[in-house]
Every structure is written in structure tokens, then in C-alpha cells.
Length: 115
Length: 248
Length: 92
Image (cartoon, rainbow over all chains, first blue to last red; front, side, top):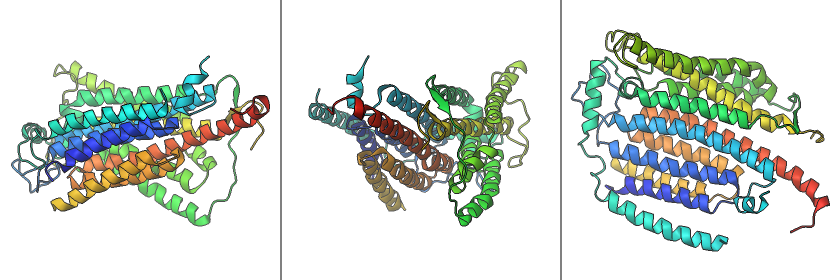
């Protein structure tokens, strides 16, 4: 259990990277990249977690000494999620244009259709 | 390099990375431990600024510079995607087709859920400093709610609901308001993105300094940015065709 | 309670692998949406409601929609190019 969260994060990263390597469609590579990015979310939140601690939102009956999980990594993960969504959209637009120019969306074929 | 060779090289590389990751993870503090020095510092600062939601305080107050850069990345990506998806010189845009079968039950669900989702999204944005939420979350909920009309209705209904030009102005307004608020801190000689509003009472709506205005500006920029982005994709898929292609 | 987190972690790893291995990008949009839902569940269990809210909105709705639209556009272009090219060049 101690290393399960980190192991899952590493597994997601590697699964996403291998998904990019074996993709046959540009959009498949983009989705696999999204999986690899989610590995970083799991790692960040796993680092900040504390057992039996509340969420970092203070209600009226909590004091400054109440145990909460680490909010700094949550803020980083929030930024991470939004930025990766917009980058995914940009990559999808690039894929559409590449397919339009070369007539194929297979990454293996894109090299042989230059010029 | 053939596909088989490529996969073999990738497998070797992945194995190496896995070994390095395992070596790193075994030296990290245990999952669920109690030693989080950044948490103690951040929570203390958030309570001093009267912000119950520490993550919002971090996003818009303590680490506001990260959010500023993220806003700019959002605007830049939307701009780049829209520029990439404009019709080329050999393409033309045909008018959106109306009609198509929509189940009345679907349409009813869409019309009922649309105001509910919009109200929820607005609530999440405006109470971002008090409860879990904030500009980004509320903005995404609002954008998704608007596109419920597409899912349960048809594309023409969606186009009536969102004149894209206004959403483009809205995104610019949101990002510009964010920058102006950040510069206002500079003008008031307290520092870039400093709190220029009073902290107020802990838990009240108008409290937590400038977190609420920043959150609202971010929410506006995010919802308008997402709508513009999706509109570019919709237009590209449903309306833009090669000039001379027969209508499907 | 930790076993719930453990089970969700294993589920996340499994669904993530399924998404990476799904053949066909149009099907990946659906599995990606499901994966985002499972990730949201994990984030709630790790006491991160803000992160879960944004992942829910973005991962289940916005990104699969963009992926579907891009895939459909590319498929339509390839169908048109394939139909046009079949008269012009010999099959490879």
C-alpha cells in the first residue's frame, strides 16, 4: 500500500508512453499522451495525501491545527489538468491540419509523404 | 526503423525508466504520512488572508503568478487552435443543417438541465473562496452545461445559444480583467497581484481579499475560451468542406 | 478506508491501460471518458474536491468531445481522399 500510489503513477506514465509508440492514428497518440499526463496527477496527489486528514477547505469548526491534506500539490494538479486539456485541444487541431495536408493520419505514413 | 524494432527499443527504454522510477519511489516518504511542511505554511497564510478554501487561496493569492501564466497559456492555445482550424483557401463553409430527429424527452432533459447547470457553475465560480470550487472548475461546468444543448438538441440550437464573437470578447475581457487586477496591486504599491481588497470576515461572501475577483475573471475567461475552442472544432467538422465537394 | 483507495488505484491503472490499448481513436474517446470518471473518484477519495471537480468537467466532457470531433473530421477527409485517389493511383 505504501508504494501502490507511486507505482500506479509510474505505470500510467509508462502505459501512456507505450501507447504513443504503438499508435496508428495521430489522435490515438494524443489520447495516450493524456493518459501519461494523468500519471503525474496521481503522483502529485499521492505525495500530498495524509491518512484520516480532511480536504483543505476550512469550515467553521476546524482550527488551524486540524489535519488537512497538502493543498500545494492540489493547486499544482489543478493547473496541470487545465493546461493539459488545452494542449490536447491544440494537438487535435494540429492533427486535423496534418491529416488535411498529407491525406493520412497514420504517424508511420506521415514520414513517407513529405514534399 | 520498422515497427517491431521500434517497439523493442521502446520496451528496453521503458524497462530502464521503470527501474529508475522504482529506485526513486522507494526513497520517497511513505504514502499517507504526516510530514508536509508546505501544507503548514500554506494553511497558515490562507487563514491569515481569511480564505476558507486553501486551494483557491493558493491559486489566486499565494501562487497567483502560476495562475496568471496558466491563463495566458489558455488564451494562447485557444487562439492557436482557432487559427489552425480556420477554413483554408480551398475550403468553403456551408450553412449548418437543421432538422434531424431529436427525441422530445432528450430535448426536455436538455432544457431543464441547462439552467440548473448554469446556476451550479455560477455558484461554484462565485463561492470559490469558501467551498471547493473556483474559476477553473466553475468555468468548465458552465462550458459543459452550454454544450448540453448540443447533446440533447441539435447543432442549430447550440449556434443560436452562443454567438461566438461575444464569447471571444468575453474571453479577452476575462483575461484582461485578470491582468488589470494583478497590475492594480502594483499600482497600489503593495506588489504585483497583492491583496488590494480587505480580507473581511472569515466565511462571508465578500471576503478573502482579491480571491473572488480573480476567480470570477478566471471563470469568465475559461468558459468563453472553452466555448470558442469547441465552436472552432464544431465548425470544422460540421460546416467546412472542400470547395466543390458534394453535400452529404 | 485505505483499502478503498487501494482498490481505486488498481482500477485506475487497469482502465488507463485499457484506454492506451484500445484500437481505434473513436472508441478511445468513450473509454477516455470512463477513465476520467474513475480518476475523479480517486481524487475524491484522496480528499481533493477541487481537483476532482475540474477533472470531472474536463475529462468526461470537453476532451472526449474534442477527440470525437477531430476523429470524425479526419475520417471524413480520408474517405474523400480515398474515393478520389482510387481512380488516380494503383493500390499500394
